[in-house]
Image (cartoon, rainbow, N blue to C red; front, side, top):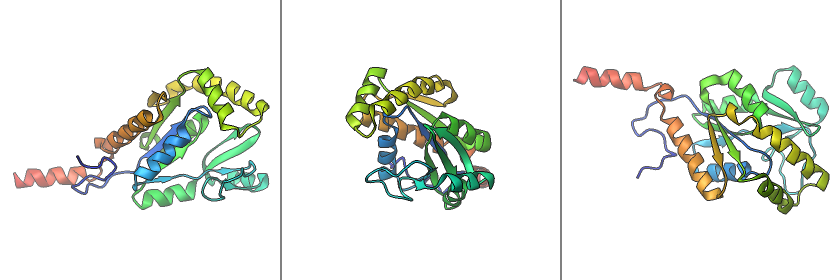
Amino acid sequence: MDDPSQPDPHGFKRRGVLFVLSSPSGAGKSTIARKLLANDPHLCMSVSATTRAMRPGEIDGKDYHFVSLERFREMTAAHEFLEWAHVFDERYGTPRAPVDEMLGAGKDVLFDIDWQGAQQLYQIAGGDVVRVFILPPSMEELHQRLLKRATDSTEIIDRRMSRAANEVSHWDGYDYVLVNDDVEECFQQVRTILSAERLKRSRQTGLIGFIRKLRRAG
């Protein structure tokens, strides 16, 4: 079987996919995002800018672009973000220029953003945006995952759980909704969605020329 991550073998040009993964913190979107990137050379990650402090093990420019509040405000005023939002007293945003560069290079772009960012991105890019929301099997399981992660204080975990209920209420703003009972199974479902979206007729900008050639040959 052909690798579903590969482009069309006939060389059709197509518009890039802006592929959004959202979920409550701890539901598994970051794990699935890493697996997608590791298995798909035609997919690039959009690295968000943030005002929050760097955590141990994080790399500036790879995990996030860590910027000051002043710099973030300057970028916002200059319209340098495709989307941005307040999350837990910090700011997160998607720089526009790198996304344009990746699309120009023929890549699809993966976004790990929340429902606010997904909504803003859809308002800008419309049909090129594919939105996938990942749910935990239960709120109790989500709480246990956050505790096991051991990266946040009890206060922050409580705030994340409160926010999770609000995030789940926006499930109907997404094109696909999956339950992450098993990370490998959920990853395969997400990969199938991406493959199918790449093949949509509306994205195949080179298809019309191919059809014309077929008709002339006939």
